[in-house]
Amino acid sequence: MNKLSLSFFLLAFTLQAEEYNFDISSYEKPDYEIDGYIELFHTHSRLNTNSALYNLFLSTSNPVSVNNQYSAELQLSGVYRFSKNQVHFQYSAESQHSDISDTYNDSLFYQFYYTNNQFNNFTIDIGKRIQKWGKGYAWNPVGFIERKKDPDDPELSREGYLMLTGDYVQSYNQSLKTISIMPVILPVTNDINKHFSVEEDTNFAVKAYLLYRNIDIDFMFLSKGSKAARLGFDFSANLSSSFEIHGEYAYIKDENLIQLDNQSQLISQHKNVIQSLLGFRYLTENEITWIGEYYHNGSGYSKQQLEEFFKLAENDFQTSPQLLSLTQQASASGYGNINPGKDYLYLSVSKKEPFDLVYFNLRTSSIMNIHDSSYSLTPELIYSGFNNSEIRLRTSFLQGNKYSEFAEKPNDWKFDFRFRYYF
Image (cartoon, rainbow, N blue to C red; front, side, top):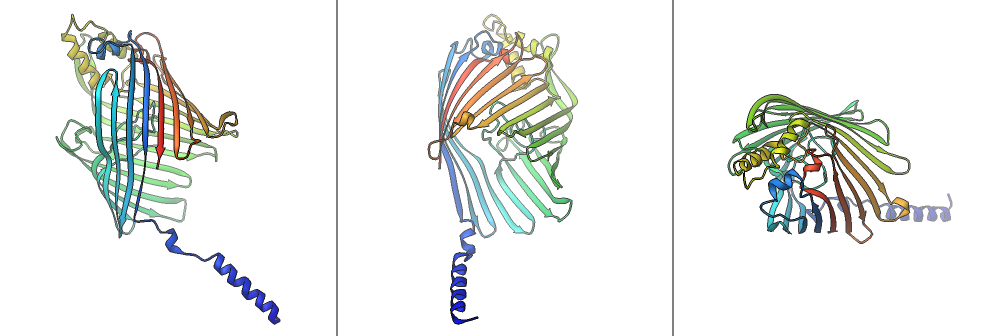
């Protein structure tokens, strides 16, 4: 090699070394991270003054036909890292006012917990934490230690519970790729986790996770304590790059069910209950996402039982005040749940940039009570063309025959406007 060729070789090597210089410090996580959003929200609702639940909750206390609700919320999330430890938090502060209620101000930590990573493959968390068990989008029958989702808006943040958890993870280079075990201790007292159950006790739960080939599988168990003992499993599998199926199954032993008898009196009975879910997610070639789910709620009420409750809620409570307390107790015992029936269908269809409209997302979702054929229909449009901002326009319609679930809700239809600024 002559001197000129050698010079070019050394120059090229030097430039390449400078171009691909690897600085590991630039890839290290910072000591702390904070993000969040500010949200402004307005809902205009047309109330169904002929519905049973309007008669129960609004006809005597605040008989209006239209309700406007305004709210402002600040939500912050963050993590602080030191040594092999972390502190995580999610904080929310909200102010809300509506035509039918007084101004409401609240601030709380959805989660605030400490993580210790000192041990190999084993993590310990202690504090208030949000758990998300299950594969379902609208419902989670195996969500044993979490607050229930709102199927009408399942992506909303939910408050966690105070608990102690561990998490052991082991990976393998074979068909069984990953296994993890998460034990949980969740106490309930008058001051701690009182919304988990009215029964004070120390609750023990465990979740075992398996990744076998391309199938996610979880097994869950909650011991008898503040709630009835229950066990379950879920799975999620990709049948192709665009088609996924998922499911959940939960068995609840000796669940306490409260219902109205033939004399319109509340009775309690204990039964073994099964709750299950089966769903899919499919992405078409033209980027339309379909999500469908069937949900069976073994502790729910039949069509006839819901009709009896709605008829009871139609009474004139000014002339029959003794029935008001009974109806309110029935509502609080389960009849007033978001979806109190036995079987439901959920369908969501979404499209990014429909009709080549840049920064727009269009989605329509629907929930139907299979037994009474009543349903909700919720189309929404999201615009994200502003820097770090999002605008959502959303409307919801409720349809059904007399004494069906969605026909007897207080709202007839509503329109939502939401503005979020992320930082």
